[in-house]
Image 1 (cartoon, helix red, strand yellow):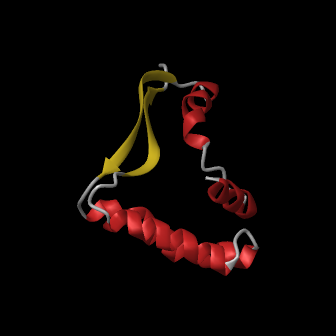
Image 2 (cartoon, helix red, strand yellow):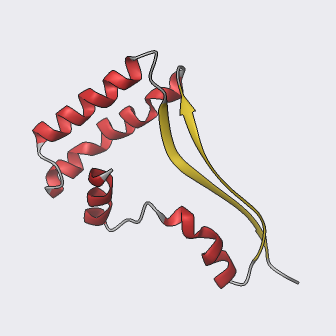
Length: 105
């Protein structure tokens, strides 16, 4: 978790913005109709390795930014890859936020 927070800060990104979505919409004058937050979890299937793929394709920039050493990056990748291959491990993806809103007439 700390790696993701540090990497986001180094990139100038706020990956936690979803939890503020309803506030941003209200501040913009929208009326919230419905809101949900959920986390997908996978035990098998092609989506189970989504984060491994994402991490493997983005970690070089984290090493270049000094957020991680190459050794730490390799250790993290080995761990998440092992989780993907283990049929007894559920892999959770990021929390998803969905808000249906409308602009009052």
